[in-house]
Amino acid sequence: MSDHTTSEGAAELSFLPMQRADLDDVLKIESVSHVHPWTKGNFSDSLAAGHWAYCIRPQADQVVKGSYLDPAVLWAYCILFPAVDELHLLNITVSPHLRKLGLGQRMMAAIEGVAFQQKMPRIILEVRPTNEAALALYQKLGYEQIGIRKNYYPASPETGGREDALVLAKSIKL
Image 1 (cartoon, one colour):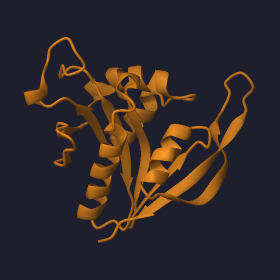
Image 2 (image 1 turned 90 degrees about the vertical axis):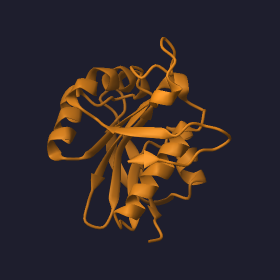
Image 3 (image 1 turned 120 degrees about the horizontal axis):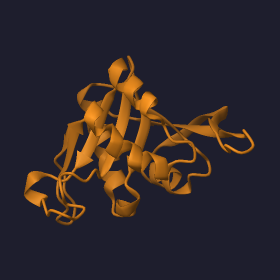
């Protein structure tokens, strides 16, 4: 999977298959990005289940050692679950240092391209109502709420409280 579109001179994104060796870098971003982060076991289970898991790192022609353009630096990652007639986005996370630069939007465009190529007419995802940045991005991209999953997310480790998930979907024109 590769995003060949560029905007305003932005470099292409390289989606590299996530490997077990990537999990420590993935967990560094995951642990500071989510109220209830996935565990190493969650990621390992996704890899074992054959989910489509990708890491986004700088391409070789962008490399600047010791900066965020160092190929050793993980920019973002995503986990996709291909079902019969839809692509389920399980996890998409951008490094906190690279947020608000359009990377999430470019990743979503590439994911929509994959759904199109694989002839999957719909992408579905869950998002916390309190994740205002993600919700705004999805709405901007044309995702619409199709449901609510009650008490879906763990919300507070201290209280054991839970948070609903908004279920969003977007039709992909095939």
